[in-house]
Amino acid sequence: MKSKEKGGKYRQIMKRFCRHRAAVVCLAIFTVLLLMAVLAPVIAPYEPTKPTGKFSQPPSPEHILGTDKIGRDMYSRILYAMRVSLLVGFLATAISTVIGVALGLVSGYFGGAVDKAIMSFTDMVMSFPYILLVLVAAAIFRPGMVSIVLILGFVDWPGVARLVRGNVLSLRETNFVKSDIAAGMPRRFILFSEILPNTVAPVLVYATSVFALSILDEAALSFLGMGVQKPTPSLGNILEGAESLSVLTDKPWLWAPAGTVIILLVVCINFVGDALRDAFDPRNADAFKG
Image 1 (cartoon, rainbow, N blue to C red):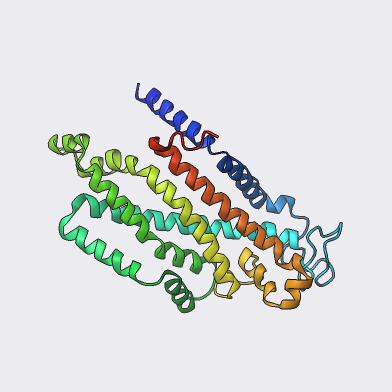
Image 2 (cartoon, rainbow, N blue to C red):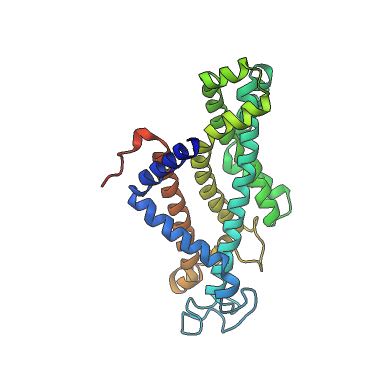
């Protein structure tokens, strides 16, 4: 019976999600970009780090997006750059989500001095300007993909923690949780079998925004030379070519494709996140009928 109820619930969620037509289109676009990134070793015509043509060559049949300043194929570099940027965004989101969920569960369930200590630390982290905190951390540690993943992962967790704590405080007062407490059920069961499954939906929605923000942050830091280092391609360090006015005006193939991909990824992820929020909230079931 429970499996049928869950199946019906998931079907309703999918039905409400599909009503958000823009999100469905964005999900399709994101899926195509993701597959292109995953299959980069198969579909990329050239090695992304080796010169294969003339310097700054315009798009041609041999190089459909042209070549960069030292003759590397831009199409191949974009494909591999998407792999790096998506991987950084995913890993940073996973780290921040795990930390935020763990601290939020403990803080909301136990309350008292534990809650006060965790929330005080969370407020302290959130009191620092976000971009300044990221830049300072990136300047302290050695630039690279591992460093940027850890920095973003350990900076983005406070929002998740506060979200989970709020949900736990609400769920703790529900009858089914009170019944478990009265029945003497172990805290592990209450936290991970009763409370955590009911916080997955808001956390998943919030994680989409963290994912998009992490991709933007990686691009910004790599553009400044504080993120993923060359010759490893990322969408951010490819955009370094846009620092020159002559490149901006005369050689758009050196920066426009990477910028377009960043915009597409971030916009698509945000649209999907908005649709998930509406799909998980029954009050918004009729929000996107048209």
